[in-house]
Image 1: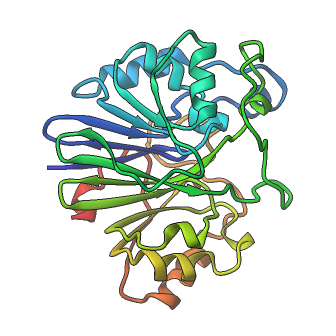
Image 2: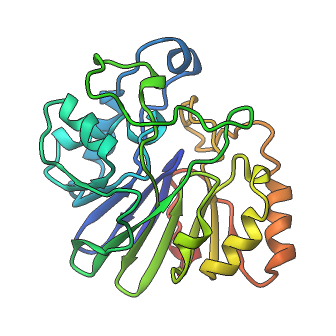
Length: 278
């Protein structure tokens, strides 16, 4: 049994019979004013409530890169769990700034592709990647997190560090997590998946983004995600607040045109996708 949920932004939750695994859990959903103009801190009340509702504490967490909407909440989660954490040197610096030493299995952009065991029949491969040109044709906040920064930092202090596509295998099912709309074709050679979680924003800014990616990784199911307005809280109705100007229907049409038989899922946040995926 595997339960899979999109938790907002690039966050994924996998629940097996034994364990809980998270990718890029960003639950704070801070408002635009705070993200652009103030120093940012995790919304610990929201994170505590989320963790309390899990069947067990996370056994493993994987972080694709260290922008705030991917890594802001990790130090607090790490303080409340002894789980294995996989990510970059920038993630290690971030946790050390919070007094959390030796918590990260550090992956570099030049040493990916080696499977890392997260639990029984669960492993992850960190595939070196690049960040999409998300703001006015430029990559936002490039470079490494400065370990000498003062906490709390502004969102601009959360530099993306090394960027990865994570390929997580649970039993015999392989999931691929593309948390930003770009990739390095040569790094994807030999990597395929059953289920591809693909970032929607800025999909038009990389030539061949959908067609080349699908041809290489050959998914049976494609799940669109990271299209939500993560500066807004999730309403009680559960409807996903969507970022403007995404042309999601155009994106779906592009996928169907290239690969008519692939199954496409447009999820709502916090909905169990298990019945649709398997």
